Image 1 (cartoon, rainbow, N blue to C red):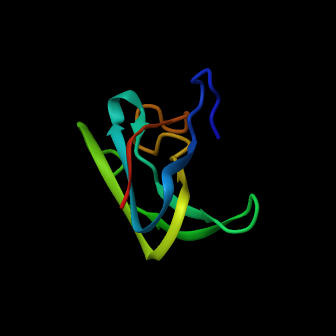
Image 2 (cartoon, one colour):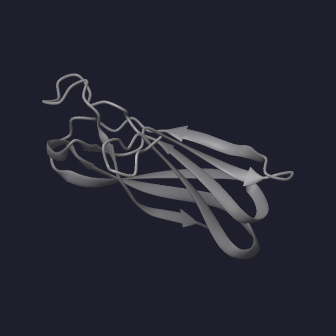
Length: 121
């Protein structure tokens, strides 16, 4: 997953507290890419809702195929839609690239995963 000292950021697990149970059917996460800084958006996102006790069930998975070596700094939105469900908590798992891709100056070395926004609608 990640190490708090910043040496690796391979995945992100977030729990969104909506304050009270609400019906939702869409969740999005926005990742940041800056190849010069070895920062890449999530390669895949999974949403989970609580079921029984501490267990969660998947409401969907999504990957994106943005060019990994695209120059510049940009934000990559990833939107996950699912059948409407009522929940107070939604868990989000975003998985990073783990290593810089072939053709990158840091190919094979650890890559950063940056996420700047999570939206639940």
